[in-house]
Amino acid sequence: MNDDIQFNRDFRCEYGVMEEVAPRIRRIVAENPGPYTFMGTGTYVVGRGRVAVIDPGPDYPEHVDALLKALEGEEITHQLITHTHIDHSPAAKAVKERTGARTYGFGPHGSGKYAEGVQVEAGGDMDFTPDVTMKDGDVIEGAGWSFQCVHTPGHTSNHLCYNYREENALFSGDHVMGWSTTVVTPPDGDMAQYVASLKMLSKRDDAVYFPTHGDRIKKPKPYLRALIIHRKMREGQILGCLEKGATNIPDMVASMYDNLDPRLTGAATQSVFAHIVELAEKGAINADGEITLSAVYELG
Image 1 (cartoon, rainbow, N blue to C red):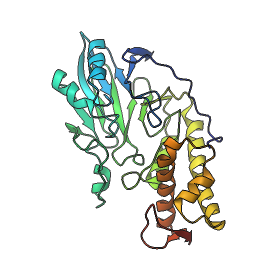
Image 2: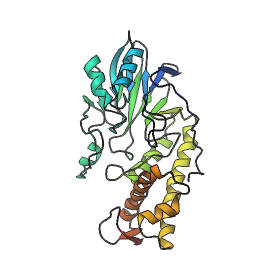
Image 3: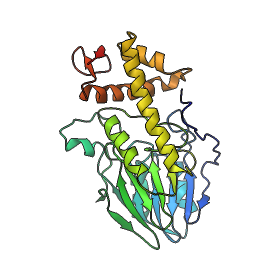
């Protein structure tokens, strides 16, 4: 399925236990493993004494309890949210109630699309609105640490990565993960924006990535190149399917994905659809009506 990318799935963790993963960077993993979350949501803590928390995680009381217990004697001053999927942002509410720590993020779920007049379907953390709204290039400063915000729409329209400037490390959320490719689900997910964000990141010089799921990515640039090539390959596969007479998305998925875990059929379907939306917008393919998951397609 993904022989063109070298994934790293050699990741172990002990749930509820804070681990130091790099100088001044700690991680505690929520017990929410699954086909979309890998071993679970990794909540990062940066700094000592007065700290920032990145992606507090799902609304699991036991995860919040473990996080706060591990930080006894320290103060959470900032909560940084990469995006508003339910395994990333919901715990921010409980953390704020118990610590007073304000939240920082791009905006509510779908906020990157609402400005374009796109009505985003429910499915994310619809209750989350950051206390402080951040945009690309903004800087967040704390006690001996600072972050620059990097807007990376594609997985979601409100996705932010955070560059930890003192270590030149990028907290990449779900935009770039070492264990798997990223699911892109229209209408909030946008394949054209996703690939553009990958290309933008490839021009940066971040030394290491810390995704929310899985282990660090030690060599970001070649990995980003592989992801970009992979997306171009998928686009070519779709055009090849149409040439061979596979004109609907279920047939394309069956042709494009070998030995697909049945639990990931929905993710594969959405990613193919995201590519189709982009191809249709470019005029490379046409639909028999509206561009939908159930439409029949042909070459443009």
